[in-house]
Length: 138
Image (tube, one colour):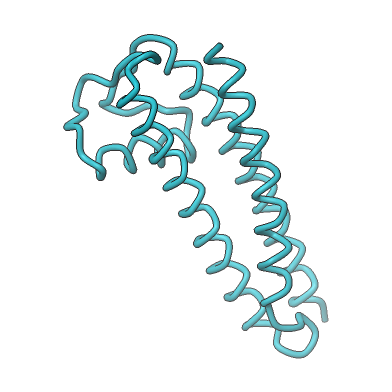
């Protein structure tokens, strides 16, 4: 059940990330005429997009922990919103190595978030690279 929920959450992450990239592309200046601005706007847009994705997963963890059916967080987890954001961000940007320990089915969601984070981060890096390549073309 937790694996399927994790799969659904990562699917939603991928779909929302796609639309987020389209939004970043729509607001960035033209790479040919304003190269540096295009790179900076793209970078900041991706930073905002990833921050929202991390916050969304933190909110999901909060709901799952309140429900109680998916396990618990332990170790250095202090039951604060900041702790959930930290946990979500570390899961998203790395393989989830934190001082916060998971127990129960929530571990599957934790693992799936790490997979999804890796996927969208590399997708974003490729997107930023393509903007830079076009902007830096001589």
